[in-house]
Length: 248
Image 1 (tube, rainbow, N blue to C red):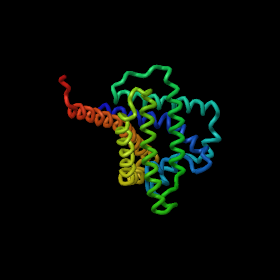
Image 2 (cartoon, helix red, strand yellow):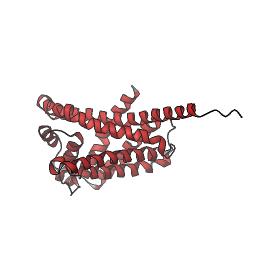
Image 3 (cartoon, rainbow, N blue to C red):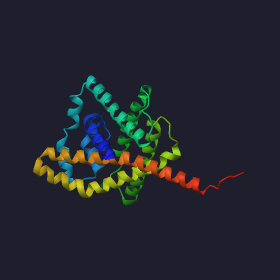
Image 4 (tube, one colour):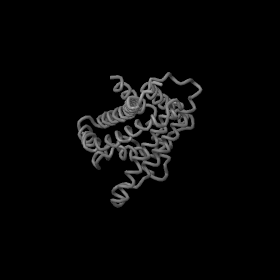
């Protein structure tokens, strides 16, 4: 129940603090030039019909840049940092660690910058319809490895090095595989829901599906870390049981 509660908080913070910042960053991405809607479509893996509904939900990339002031961009960055703080708190709860002190807030800024950079690499990768089958497989494998490395580093970095790299590896593997499974699930479930909800509820229906997808992302991010901790503890207990007792 707590995991679902934190996943819903993750989705709410994503929509209120992270998504507005990513909209501006995506609009400034001259390489793709298609805005945040394109980012979201790639993350969801939706069909062409649902893609049109997502694109209608967000304005044109040029409008986001024209209407964003320096103060507004600074405010968006500040709100985005609170998202990093929430992720840090979720990781600390998964490992039963005390809350980090205030002077570690710089880690939220660095983590947010790396997250944006990772998303830029993800959306600028060749798409399946634009590449051959071997290249598509290679890109998918690179996405999986990149996701694993990012969340492996994220746990270590946001937990301020209080947990060893080896202990964090199972959680990173679980998160990467979970996000891959969520993307496949989105193609079969969320993609049709976007099209049907758009007819029934209009653009608000698309927002509902987007929010549900973000809840799934939060569940995987926090759940992967929790499963990783349980796997690590079981592995340690098994190693202790196998070690011979020294009675001398």
